[in-house]
Amino acid sequence: MNKSGSQLVRYALEQLNIQHTFGVLGAHNRDLYNAFNESTNINTHLVNQELSAAFMADAISRTTQNNSIGAMLISADAIISQGIAEAFISGVPLLIIAGSSDHQNYGIDSQQLLQPLTKAYLKITEHEEIVSTIFAAHQIAVSGKPGPVFIDIPIELQMQDEELDQPLPVNLHAVNEGSLDQEHVDPKHIDHSA
Image 1 (cartoon, helix red, strand yellow):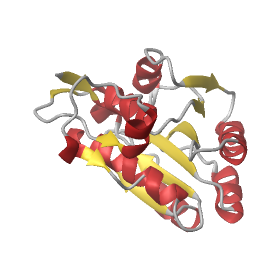
Image 2 (cartoon, one colour):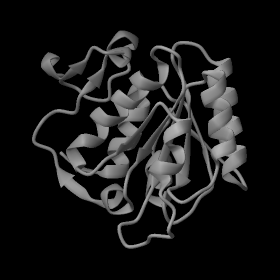
Image 3 (cartoon, one colour):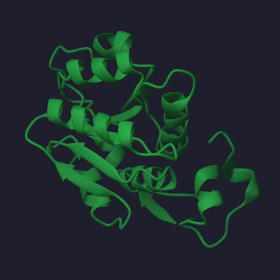
């Protein structure tokens, strides 16, 4: 089975029952939005600025049940610390998915900027890490005192197509809800941390 990095992000968010994403469309997340357009479960909401996206994702997290949290898509150099800080202080779980480029560096160190405002900063470097890292980010976001988790997925990795040798991991939530995207699931690939 051949999947792009963006298709794997979509798969992981569907497994986690994340139904709404918020963000500003740009070069850093265009491939993700294209993948999300193929989903019947994920509603994408385009806004004019990342700060609006942060507060909208925060509102979804505060008002939904069943560990369904808001997600936002931003460029890695976006300065939206006010919205993220609000979620961190208030204990609101968010997944902040950013697309960075290995070829562009605007002198902003996102990890250093966001470290005091997030529970974790995760950078995905390998195609096969995408689904499991997003599952882990969700678990971090909702466990203990909830809060935002930042996930950096480079543009090159979002667009990269790769043949998958193993079945995709399945989140326990999807198993319980009966909303699996695969016909055959190997039980050893089920993530029981949800």
